[in-house]
Length: 116
Image (cartoon, rainbow, N blue to C red; front, side):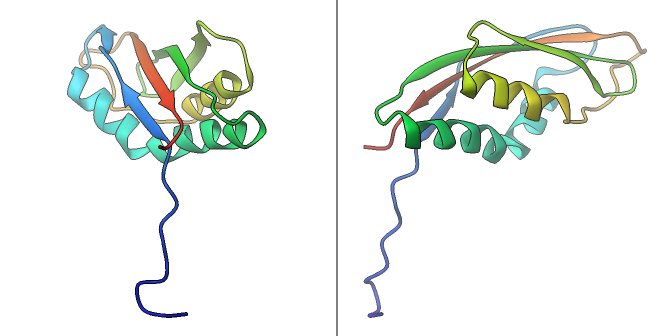
């Protein structure tokens, strides 16, 4: 192994588009939790990308955060292996408690592209 011989493999891109948050939880708090777990989302995409090279996808995941900060349910506009995996990951995330209790509905678009 020579110095400089190690090359990082290109990392597939995961972009986020406009996020909708309905309820008493700041959008930036939601975004921070998602950023903490973005590696899990990327894993879901990379796993499927190995089976389907060139896969590009926009996936909108919607979830409901309960008054304790846990995710009550998830849904997506696409029903494939990437979506199923991402929904399972999101379901385990913990968010800050919504101000004043109640539920918060989040609509989060992810755009996946292979590395170039």
